[in-house]
Length: 255
Image (tube, rainbow, N blue to C red; front, side):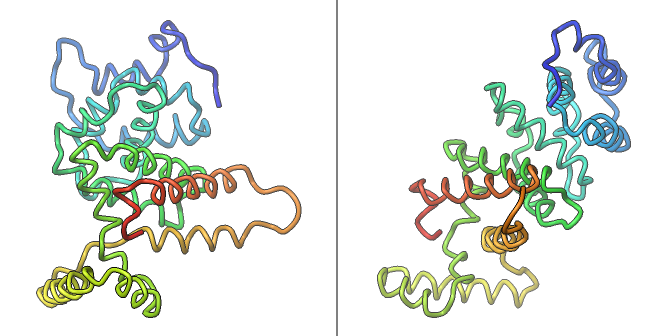
């Protein structure tokens, strides 16, 4: 929602003034990061305005992602920081401008960020609207597998370890139909056990939890009457992601 701002609107906006104080500094000066600014913008400019497009566009215009959010992202950054990056990334996709160049300035942080996005999705405090936005971001990631940084982080979620989440009967059926994978699967289990014994548990596989969350969320839809719009949109987004995963060769092998 929200009107589409003109260049004049953008220049006069309070957010643009805020940007000039904190990250769009004159003379290319180095911006000093203040996490409270990110919190304030998220609560007072995004959430308060129901994540209106004109607020997001204004922040994108000010290079909020490139100059402030991503350079200062770290493991343990706030939920507002993670969600702000997701909003800015989705906006870049909407505007059809280059997206991943910004993230590639600090590629080692991308897997950590992606993990934070998944974790935020499952946070009980996250709203249906925010969850739908997070899933939209994940859809964009899985549609960007040509990028090595993105591909490496995303394909880990649809790799062979995902089979540890299926029933014993189904696993036996899958291994019987692909006997060359049986040895690979057993080797993987041994490696996982050894790593766990050494205090390094295997990475979390989020798609099984996503499907369970989706089914639980679907069960809360009333049999009659209207479905809340944000709830419906969230369910639609998850279905869109699952369809993409099944349709793409790199993601459907073990999924």
